[in-house]
Image (cartoon, rainbow, N blue to C red):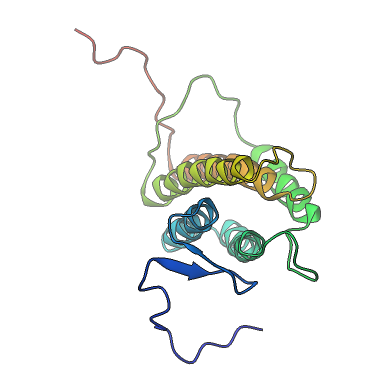
Length: 190
């Protein structure tokens, strides 16, 4: 359980920060970059939640926010720590099942769509783009550690699925409130 009595500690004033293990790393470390992107993603989902009235989707997004804290804890814990909180592959399966349920009634895509459709859908598209960056940051971290496999940690897989989920959620929300804005190739050429 987390208990914080004092929010500022001054321990990061010199440009480093602590991991779950107690180790200190530079704030520019690949691990911290990845954690920061996941934190930004969670905040973007919170922004989307502020304007989405669909109770089912709001519940799914809230569930995902909890998963993202698990994912952040996984990233903040060096691999060698015993008993660390790790993202569970079942969390990916849950996400895939929710994605299938949301996508099933949607019409097939006939074009790329613009990230638009109102405040809620636009916020979901923004969260999707941040999820893609977070996934890239996790891969950069993985590569910096010299391990290009994801067999031991489903973090990158979860983020990959989450960006797809957020795309489907944006479509679901846009279609429920109006029409999607389709990309028109070369529309503004003279």
